Image (cartoon, rainbow, N blue to C red; front, side):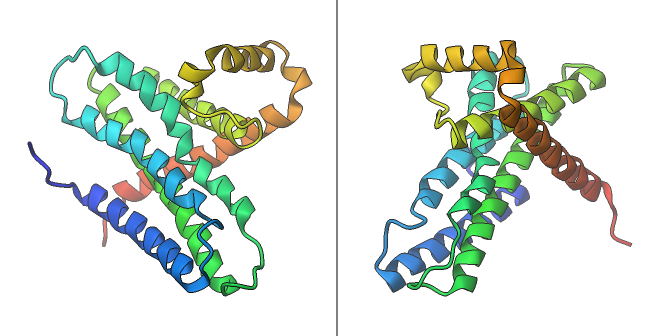
Length: 215
């Protein structure tokens, strides 16, 4: 088994470790192991789509697990940008310096963005082997739109990725209402479109930066 990490994976791991060290130091310094504890779990969930996407990149031929894993990937993908919304937990507290908590929450949000964008780039590279560019581009836009929707129902409606198994009826019913009666949910769709637009700007900016050569 080849356990060698790519340059991207090494930098992502470094960024995650940095955030977790900040979190552990805060636990030790304040004695408060509840505040910001969600960052450990949410960061773990955010790594799942990236790990799945690295499996796709390593595939050199057809595999029967491709479609099931693509389904799992799109279910877990919103967990990465979801970390941006954990900024809601940031507030002035007396047990830790404000600047320290600001560094912690922005580090967590940054990891979410990086993991999500790197994951999508891997999937785009994989799909480009088999599909036409226009189809791939359409799927990228659709994935980011689904991310916006997934973040909303996760943050505000408290659905989780695994509800597709544990509560498929509730999830299907809620989504059907959102799609069939969109005018009844203006907040949901405005958030979905705006957040997806935010992610699209980040995604295509990072791709352009990757093309820029150092002069």
